[in-house]
Each structure stands twice: as C-alpha cells, then as structure tokens.
Length: 368
Image (cartoon, rainbow, N blue to C red; front, side, top):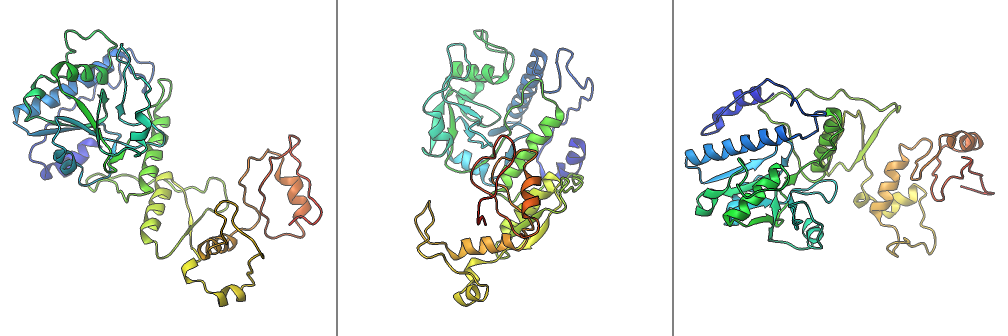
C-alpha cells in the first residue's frame, strides 16, 4: 500500500526518501503484533533518528513527526504550528477517551503521572499552548533553532537510565538539550487511537482504527487518499432486516459524513429523509392529529416540545415497526412481552425501569 501511494504521490513532494525493508516481518522477541519488545523500540527510535538526520542534511527548516495511525484533519496545521514560534510543539490530538498525545506530569522514573492540569487542557477548558514534560505521536520541530541541534531519538542520552521507551528517551533528550515541549489546543487538529494492550491483535487494531475514523467523521469530512486504492468494506446489516439512517435533507454535510461513517463500518443503511421541524406548521400538526399534552414541559429543560423535537419523533415514527430499546434487556425479555402485545399494537415504545431478573415485564392495566 505504501509503495502504491508513493508511486502516485511522489510528484507532489520536493524530495522523498524510500527505504523499504520487507524482512523480517516481525520481531524475534515479541509476543504478538501489538507487543513492544526492546527491539521494536530500538527500531522505531532509529527510524526517527534517520528522519531527523535526513532533514538536517537537507537544511530543512522544520520537521513534522506523525504516527501512521494518527489522522490530521486541520488543513492549516503546518501554518498554525509555525505561527506558534516554538522549538518543539505538538497539536493536541483527540481520541474517544481522555487519552491524548501529551503528559502534564512525570514520575522521578520518567513514567506518566496524573495531575490536575491535564483534563482542563484535554477538554478545552483552558486554551492556548502549555509547557509539558512529554509530547508524542504527532509533534513539530523547528530545526532553525540552535537548541534543536542536541535533540536525538537514538542512541539514548549517556545519562539516561530509565525504561527503554522511545517517547521517554526523546523527552529526556529534550530536557537535557534545554528544549521545552509544548502542547497546543487552540484549534482542533486531528485524532489518534487509544493504545492497545500487548495481548491484542491486528483485528483489534483495525476495529480501533475504524472507531477513530468514525470519531473524526462526526465533525470532519475526511476521505481516503486519492493516491491509493482502498477496497470498500463489504456492506452488512448485522443480521437485522434493515438499518435506517434518518437525516435532514438540508443537512447535506452531515448526511455525507454519516454515509461515510456507515461505509467505514461496513453497514448497509436505508436513507430516510427526516421530517424537518422548521417546515412544520400548526395546520400540518392538526392534520396529523398531533396535540400537545396540556401543561406538559420537558423534565430536563422545563419547556414545551419544540417543532424540531416533534419532527424528530415523526421521523422515527415513520419507520418504527415494533419497538425501540433504551434499556438493557435479558435474552428472554422480548417473547413474553410481544406475545401479550402482538394483537393490539403496531407501535410500541419500551423505556424506564430495569427488567426483573426473571426476564418478565408485566403489563400494567391501561399500559400504552
């Protein structure tokens, strides 16, 4: 895949250095594909050092290091990082959890230390560029600065005596060189997957990366590279008769992202145009027989239902056939309830209390 991409994309770059090494395909001391033995750390550190050396030899002003499973979604990333005018700076990367590509504290042995400073930065409650003891995965280095000349990924600094770990070795090198690391969260820059455990496999990694793509697609319209062929994931309905995707026709941007999300997960979905609350008027609601319950107010906001919420309900009502679950159910839950309701109900909404341990939910008198 990399060779195919390089063959087609090389012309858009000033210079490309290609050092293929297909053998060996694994490390002799690894437990599995997600295990990081010392030989793997050493290999990655040497590759990064080779990239740093090549950039210096070609008199590059800057170098951007990006892990291959990181997704950069901000097209102005390089301009934004250059404008920060810092020697070593990382754009804060997002994930499905609080995990990111920076630390706010380290132990005396160089390991991660939980601090109260981390979460406000990660959740954008504090905005700016902040000095931190560790950045990794994606970071930007200004090679014009004299202090950057002493930075090295490999070999470890002579005074380094902590764990043989690539990011810890480089962070120590930065401290010894007097280079302060920074993380910036002024903008949204991109996404990275949560690290997997050593015993996990390539299938787990694929699932995790697909999740990262779907997270990015919530707010960003991203595509596969035009320079490489990515075979589509065979569509599947997950053993359901049909999967529906409801979307407002006027929200074309969201529809595009949702269709890409479905495609990335290999889901086959039927697209349904949502009922637009902005287009609903009183006459239409009366014609549909929709009346507001006297005195009803939303329990959370304390207001009456909006037209948008009514449109949302009507959109779902058009496709609901039997039930929608918003609770945990036991394997024996549906049959007894459905048998009791089958003759009289076409539409059934189940919500509220937990199902009893015996899996039987009794129907109350007059229950609707």
